[in-house]
Image (cartoon, rainbow, N blue to C red; front, side, top):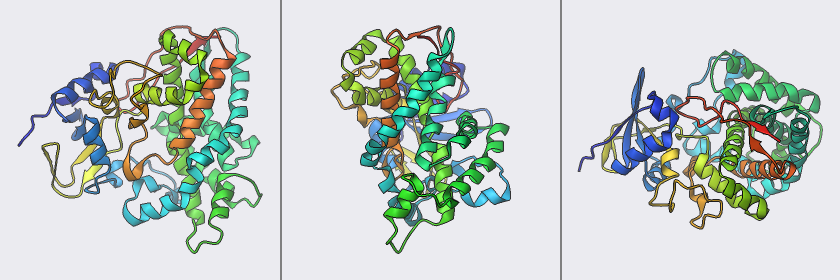
Length: 391
């Protein structure tokens, strides 16, 4: 049985302005749609929750070199560019097994007390500003890189430079990103090559596997740091989106202020409702495959629409409504993908966002939007241009 699939033009201003509605219309017509844009060859996209989960967990669809737009970098950086996110099969499984103990939910919970002072220092800076404050610039943007520096063990004196590199990576493309990569790699090599003891990621991984026959090489450790910097900027846009959403929904904000114990559920619901990633990384069919009634040819790219599946009414009741007390388990969202490539740092990201939002709401009880935030027209990321607030 063939399925007539809807078309979505990713360059359409209406799609960029309101992807939730655009992908939602496609979802109700078909479990599969076709993405297109000028100069873009086209891609299949799964629009419903069950189909997306199935594809993300299906070994017939693989991540490969075509998934990523790798920038040109100096020769000495090239050995560190292929992260485990780009690997499949035994190579991916081996690295995942070696690094997963350092990214467990337990380790993230143990790391929480080290995030608290980072957030507090950033909020001190926010409080010192006159007039409306851009929370994206002053709080959400520097937060992930400060946390990564603490996790990896970067010296305090070097962290301002790492912040700049993090901002370049968060921008996602362009000369600024390319220029930042050698500094990140050189900094990661210095961190991995250091011999000072400590409870940082590098020493933890070395300690966990000290008696194992198989250990991470120096190159793999440096690559892991690059992976963290590359993938670890998500909380920037998630925190900014979450703050904007709460300030735009006074009843939800009031409920959270009245019962701070709701914060873990609130973070899951905010990730579902306004998470920044709109599409999963493209996979490529290893063979001719039929999925949801649609024939996908060998080598053709396919992705999942996170903004669509996270509002699938087949899974979430009244999915267009932000509800931090939601009873139908908002953690079923696919904001961190699914399957073998489920986000390695998901537990750390969750804790980071919980700490950030809790401290922010506690510190500024009169927090309010100073104006209506604008958004960057990006087909892949739901993100703000700024987030000006009054304290």
